[in-house]
Length: 291
Ligand SMILES: [Zn+2]
Image (cartoon, rainbow, N blue to C red; front, side, top):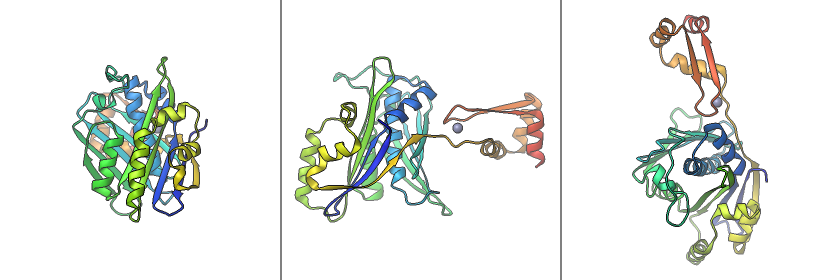
């Protein structure tokens, strides 16, 4: 199944829903970063959430950064997405791993850490980006994001994110959904949603069973007469270019570049998101600072 996100709404206009199928994105991230199973799940959940938040933005030029900084061994998790369905990410320590939890699930909360905070930065092309932040609840990412939306954006929501890692450590299934309760939602519907979610299988199981995002929407929330508003293909894509890397180099300052020239006579910059290597000779570096 190709990765994509659907955006849906109920017939009363009180529930907004995003459902993502993201198996290929998470597998690509795993191959680029060589992540351990638990790190694959942590990065995969974060990438899936970022992709859904990215799709929710209005303009093609908008960009969203979703970062998690917990006190666990994985270090920082950084993801970036846009509304065209492009998403990318990395973690500080991809080899960080944890024994599975007693219930057999990967211990994402353990590898992320239960103390720390998450940050959502929306660059909407204004002078200052919009930055929201909240403390982590469990490090399991979905719970943390629910709290963030509630406290920082006054948006009640239900979120499920899941990555199923196969025995050979490749990604078997990944996906997520984000249900947002709009201000006019009825109490009886909220009660019903709580019941549904209590009994629902994890999203990674549903995707693994071969359900499409449309079928997930129908199976979980069909009784609310949901309608699909749009369907956006999503992919892991890094848009780094030599030009952008040159800007990063320049931002280090002339002095720093001069010391690179003196000490090494060259520089090599590796893109965090895709591991592409950019090599700069002594000549290249000199031209950079002359410019
Ligand atoms: Zn890159």
